[in-house]
Structure formats: C-alpha cells, structure tokens
Image: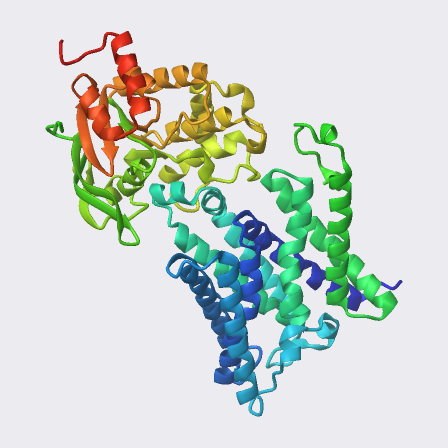
Amino acid sequence: MIFDSNAFLIIFTGALIAISCGFLGVFMMLRKMSMTGDAISHAVLPGIVIGYFVSGSQRSLEVIIGAGLLGILATLMIEGLRKKAKVQLDASIGITFTLLFAIGIILINLFAYKVDLDQECVLYGEIAYLPIDLWITKSGLNLGPRVTWLAILNFLFVVGFIYLLFKELILTSFDEGFSSVMGIPAKGINLALMSMVSYTTVSSFESVGAILVVALLVVPPATAFLWSKSLMPLLRLTAALGILIAVLGYYLAYWLDSSIAGMMVTVAGGFFLISALIKGKKPSWLKGTTKVESPLGI
Amino acid sequence: MITQVENPVLEIHDLTVSYDQTPVLWNVDFSLPAGKLIGILGPNGAGKSTLIKAIMGLISPTSGYVKIFDKPLNDVRARISYVPQRESVDWNFPASVLDVVLMGTYGKLGLFKRPGKKEKDLALECLEQVGMSGFVKRQISELSGGQQQRVFIARALAQQADLYLMDEPFAGVDMATETAIFQLLRDMAASGKTVLVVHHDIHSAMNFFDWVIMLNLHLVASGPKELVMTEDLLRKTYGGKLNLLTKVTDLISKKEFNPLKS
C-alpha cells in the first residue's frame, strides 16, 4: 500500500467525480429518471464528435457545448416521444439514445481520419493517466493535472446548481403539477438538471468513460436510498459513498493491477449488494416507523 | 339552471377541453361568487378533475377562456392554491411533513431563496389547523391516507391564497376528519376566501356546500345549493344510474329537503 501524490490526485479526482455524479443522481432517482441519465451519457456522443471536429481539440469548450446540446436534445426527444407519440418511457429512452449513439459512431467513423478520437476513448476513459496529463500555461507554469481541475470545476458547478435551485428541484421532483400552478417552471428546471447531467457526463468522460459514469449516477444514490428516507442524509451518504468507492477502488485496482474506474464501480456495486442484503433481511418489525438512523455514523 | 354572478371570482367562458380529439368537457360556461364553499359534483369521468386542471392551466383548452379575479391566470398565480389528488405524487419521496407543507410557501419566495423562520412558523400554524401538529418531523412515507390528505390541505393553506381548488380532498378520509376539514373550509369561506372542491358524496355535499356545480361532460347546473339540488338536476347529472338516484331521492325525502316547496 503506497500513498503518494499520484495516488492522492487519482483518489481525489475520482471522489469528486463520484460525488458530482451522485448528487445529480439523487435528483434523477427522485424523478424516476435514472435511466434518462444513462440515455444522456450515450446520446452526447455525436455532440462530442461534432464539437471535436469543429474545434479540432478534445479539450475544448465546443466539445462540452456540443455534448450539452445533445443531452438536452435527448431529453426533449424522450419527452416528445412519450407525450406526443404516446410511446412508453422505457421504449422512448431506448429509441432515443441508441439512435443518437449510432449517429455518433457513424460520425466518428466518417471523421476518424481527421481527429484523434475513437469509441474506446469515449466509452472507457482512464483515470490512471491523470498525473501525466498536466495543465501547463503558456508561460510554462505547471498547474497540475488538467482532469483534476475539470473535476473540481464540475464539482463546484454541481454543488452551486443544487444549492441555488434546491427548493425548486425538490418541488418539481415531488409534485410537478403543483409547481406549475405556482408558476415555477418545472420544464425549465428539468432541462437545467439534464444539462448539468450532460455536462457532468462529458466532464467525466476522460476519467471514467461513458458507460461507467452511468453507474456513478445510479448506484451510490440507490445505495443511499436503502439507508435513508430523508433528503439531507441521503445527499451526505451519497457523498460519503463517493469518497469511499474512490479510495477502495483505487487500492483494489492497484492491488489487482486493473482498471481504477472499473474497480470503483465494482466497489459501488458491492456496497449496494451488501446494503440490499442487510436492509432486505431485516424483519419488518425492526424497520418499524422509526426515524432515519445515521448509518456509518454520518 | 345556471346562475351567473356579478363581479365573479372565477369566470369560465365556453370552455371546451379534449384529449386526442375526444372532448371531455363541452361548452362549460359559468361564474362563481366570492366567499363561498363550492362543490363540483358529477359521476366518474364527468370531467371534474379536467375542469380543475383546465382552470389551473395544467391542460390547455381547445376553446374558451378562464378568468380569475377578472385577470388571466398568469397574473394571479400567487392568489390561487391547488390541492391535487393524493395519488398524483409518490409518497415514498424522502421528505418530512414539514418539508411538504413548506412547499406551499415557495411560490411567494421566488427563485433561489430558501424558506426561513417566518415560513416555518406559517407551515406549523397550517399543520395545527388541520390537526397534524404531532407529525411535523414524520416522514411522509409513514403517513396514512387521511393524514397525507391533511398534509396536502396544510400545504395549500400555507399558500395563503384567495381561491382554493381542491381535487377530491376527501378521498380516503374518515368521517370525523371529513367533518373537521369541512368546518375548516367553511371558516375559510366565511373569511372571504373562495373554496372549490371536487366531491363525490351527495349527502355531505348537501350539508356543507353553499354553491354547487353539476357536471357531466357538459355543465348541468351551477348555482346556490337550494336552487340546484333538485331530483331533476341530479337525474340529469347522474344519468341512468337509477339505483343511485333512488338513494338520493330517499335521502332528500328523509331530510325533508325539497327546495321546490320552500
């Protein structure tokens, strides 16, 4: 077991990404939209390719904007199919994201000779390369790993977003009709949340990839929900789980010499399984009507 | 039998609402006075909830318009309050009773602002009015149906509106609670608020409401209870449901309630 600056940076970045995804995931789950997060994470692919093609760089603002727009488009398509064409929610998610993802793959193939981008890079990502990908200013100042800065920025945006729109997010998640009657724009809040999810997904691509980011959106909130029935403990527990899976994921991956992101998600899955077993086994009279207990002393 | 009023709180003009080309409300046209407890009666599928949703702008009408306090809905949102059907939300949501009642104050708070002590005191007061003071910290997933309904009414009270629209607030509520809530609504009406309630039970409707709207796809009647609660109009509203109508007739004769004679 070693703990050096590289280990710290990787764990720190991994934890930030897991917490950002987890916080958004909590609200996605409350809206019963966890799978919409999945859809968005795949549907942003064409946006990334177009942004990449326009700017010629994988690290540009255009990529994030392109992905954000595609994320919103995916949300609108899902809603449109469901409301206008009366397709079931799961079917409309399936149609939307596979279609957009397929377009993304075709675009990659068409432009592949022009840009350095392939499906592997988008789908998997690799957080272990983070310490060698440095942000060096024009004057030659070394500011540390670029991906870590992206994760910090993303984390601040997510926390700021949730802090500012906390009551609107809760109200529109709980009772959309009531919030519309009050004049709180439920649709606008929904789209804002989806944009944040798109942005977070893109921002986390390089580290954990498009597939595993879905796990970070869904699994920690679902695990926390097994333990807590009120919102603040739910968010705190999700954050704690994010840190825990980053630490455990890193050292298990180090020990087995395997993918860190993969191990983080496996650890998250393990936590969920254990929680489900503990909570599921408990006889009903033990659950009772007691108030929320604080698991793990959080 | 439609009584129109001067200076109405709510005016509905030629409202037609359809889902996928099928009209569910036809040419509904009425106006309502202030300070009354008003019941909307009608059989299942008569369009009662649709009417409420159209008034609240949750469904856009095919034709016609709604005016509240003589203004379009968007200008007066802060003055109206809505109690949706209890089943319309997921009660497993991680929130306490107080959290839900506080939601009633969000409309007046505006974007980005958090509820403070003033809002909290108001919410506690509203909970006391519906007799739920003992459940402030309780998670909403642990409430019974009747308690959930009372939390919804407390949330509407916290909106401090002038016009209240309630979609079946008495579904799954026991008799004692129903009477208590009706008393609360009567007090609100007496203090000048207008309360519009979608209701099922014709018996209690006769006891409690001042004004009754009868609906069956089209508007059958709208007017003071004494004028509208007649066998003829009830028959028109409830159509061929003879069994039910016999019961209603029995009820009317038992209570010696015959507005035509008086």
